[in-house]
Image 1 (spheres, rainbow, N blue to C red):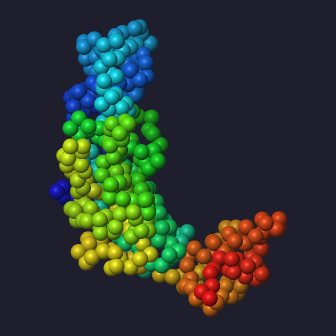
Image 2 (cartoon, helix red, strand yellow):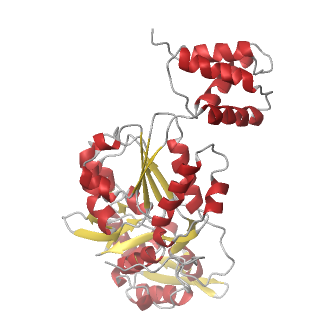
Image 3 (tube, rainbow, N blue to C red):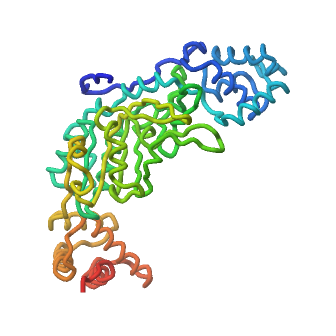
Length: 426
């Protein structure tokens, strides 16, 4: 297991500093690159060697090596010049070969990186190297009304880089806290590979729905098989199953797609509404015991071969159930931080109401909100939640739209909103 370095005060952006010049420097099987270049030429038609270089994301020298090999094997031919670059087209022999290759594997994107390169890069970019301090937490969470104790626990958890449990009643802001945690980490960039090669198989990693690409530098000296992104954030909820945590082999495309935890490496993986997934909590937890304990995960290729990859992310379990009812003591020990998010106090509730009202440009009277608090506790026997002010003001806005008038935060509208929102217990 890799020994991690001490946390630096200002962690640098680790990345592939230069573009490999030759195919030998790529660390990937030569046959994988040959096949990829031929598939690209078949799918996109005649192109210059410069265009091929852009499609496959390799430097000019490495691309010229591929072109020379394809030409020597009579898989492509030169049809002319585009500026200073040869224009190449696939031959009939090459087309037959490309069709056979696409039947086996339809991946036709950027050249993959080696598994060894991926492992090393993920380790260097570990969230455990990320240092966060009190001013950073206060600034990031300024839009939420939270107890200072909770903010301190969150800051401590972020510096640990270990998993944490957010638990408490429904509606108290657990999901909002988890999302803000991911935004704190997202302030730093990391490198995500387009794809990884393992034993001749391709695993697509970069996902534009998950990975937010940073502004690209005009300098293209770096290895473009990697994409510079903000630290990723992946949220899964009730749809999560054990099967989703392993490599997904698409029956049509015939190449693997990275599972959620691999896409979340170097970032945050949020398990929302934990305990309400399609798979039983015990199944999910047994699947995560080794990764959480040792920082490594094992994925299975078709045929049964196990692949070891890093498990380097902050895992946030958010639940409105009692953690002790969901997991055993051994698993709770592996989750270093457990943060209970309680119901809002009167002062917090009024402050949240004030902020929401101010955001909607509504006049605000604390005395009216005190009456709402008495109503919630007295008539409906419910605790105060951080989501209630927003939901009640939404109700007022909807009623005003129905009556074609401007919304007002007065006693009458608040009473109607409360009656519509809360359910009496009889």
